Every structure is written in structure tokens, then in C-alpha cells.
Amino acid sequence: MPTPFAAALEERTLRLKTRLCIGLDPRLTAYRDADHLRQHTLEVLELTAPLAACIKPQLAFYEALGVPGLEILEEVCSLARALELPVILDAKRGDIGSTAEAYAAAWLTGRHAGSALTVNPFLGFRTLDPFTAAARAHGGALFVLVKTSNPDQADLQGSGVSEKVAAEVARLGAEEGPGLSSVGAVVGATHPEELAHWRAAMPQATLLLPGLGAQGAQAADLAAAFLPGGVGAVVSASRGIQYADGLNLEASLRAAQQFRDELNAALLA
Ligand SMILES: O=c1ccn([C@@H]2O[C@H](COP(=O)(O)O)[C@@H](O)[C@H]2O)c(=O)[nH]1
Image (tube, rainbow, N blue to C red; front, side, top):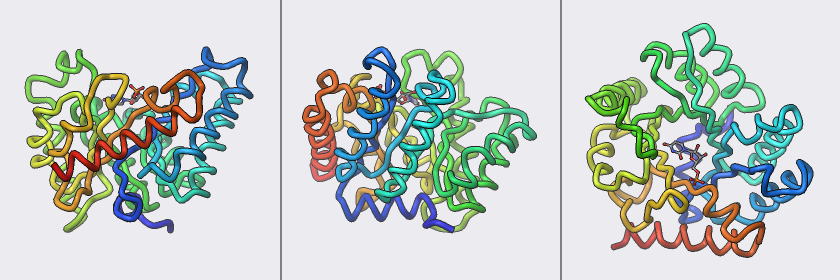
């Protein structure tokens, strides 16, 4: 079995001194064709890898290309594995239990064993069970949507819903004994004033914080998401790195360096 996801992420965070998750969300409109998209996405990954704690491909952008897109996704994942980079597959899966089993088999076992998957708890807490079982058995992880980064999240996530999901994430984490668990949580970096609350509510969860860069979140505001020692959270930026200045690779590298450094500085402030 590969090193469990949470342990691999923590080890890489401390060894490379980075809390940055690089989002790889390639948009066909930015390229001549799918080959051009593939080449640029792999180049961004290879160039920025030393600055990354992990990567987060958003499956929607690969699925939009059909079979060639799924082939590109597999290339991205195998290059990440070769570079020893943990992979968070951002698919936000969730369904009735028997279908959830198929999603878990697709994205948390076999060639994706040891990866993490974002999951949607809307169908009920027991629909998370196939994902927790697969993650625990194959060294992977899940990131449960608790408080998403978008402004309209409160339509459904207000009124105590996020609180209930966070309590379930904490309960699942405690089942595994002490330390960081295989059940993490998505909490938008766009809610800096709430980070201390969500950190305390889910003490064993690794937090995935999307929203840095294009959605306006600032690295300097995010220190409260981390556990002592600067572990237990990663912050993701996608457009702000891959398209920092069109397709300019040097600009992607500079943006990743700046985000990494700003996150580290926030922890020391
Ligand atoms: O609450 C959430 C959960 C997931 N996302 C995903 O993260 C990236 C954000 O992209 P940017 O270009 O850095 O804005 C994208 O894949 C979203 O689907 C999120 O934004 N918020």
C-alpha cells in the first residue's frame, strides 16, 4: 500500500516547506487544441512541482474533452506520482450508497490508490461510507465539502448544515484514533474569519482551502486553518498559477513561488 495520503502530504509539507496545492484546471479555450492543452498542463506541473505540497486536478475540465481528456488526466496523475506529489481529484462525487461504491472504486482504488477525492455529503452521511472504506483500505483520503468558497454557498450550507457536516467529519476522524485522519474537509479560503472555528470543529481533518488568487482570498489571512507546526491544511490556486499571465510558464512559476512564500510568511507572522 502507498504511504497514506495524510501522512504523505504532511511529510512533503514539512520537507519542502510548502502548503500550496497547485490546481490544474486546463480550459480548452486557452489553447490551439487538446494536444496543446496537454503539453502546457504537463509543463506547468513539472515546473511548479518543487513548490507544491500536492496537486488538485478538477475533473470537469478533463471530462469536458471526452476520452482524450481522461487520457490527459491519467498522464497528469502518473507524472504527479512519478514526482511523489500527492493528488487530490476534485470531482465532488456523491450518490446513493451503491453508486457511491462505484465512484469510490473508480477514484480511490487501482491506479488511483493513495489519491484523495472531494466528496459531496448532500445525499446523507452514510453515503460517505463507501468513500471512507476505500480511502482507509487503499491509503487514500477524502475531502468532504463543509463550507465551499463560492458566495452563494449559504443558500444551502447556512442554517447549521455546514456545522452538521463538520461534526460528521470530526466523528469519522476520531474513529481512526489519534492524528490526522483520512477524512478531510473543504473549507473555502474566502471565509478567513471562520477558519479558526472550522479548524477547532475538525481537529483531525486536513483542510483543503480553495479560493487563493482568482477568487480573491489572500494568503496572509489563512494562518488559522493550520495546526501547530504549520501542518493540517493546504491552500489551492488554479487559474492564478496555470494562467498567471496567459500561457507564460515563467509567470506560472513566479506565481507559485509567491503563493508558497506568502503562505509560509503568514504562519510566522
Ligand atoms: O469550495 C470550493 C471547492 C472547490 N473549488 C474548486 O477549486 C478550484 C478553484 O479554481 P481557481 O481558479 O483557483 O478559482 C476549481 O477547480 C473549483 O472547482 C472551489 O473553487 N471552491
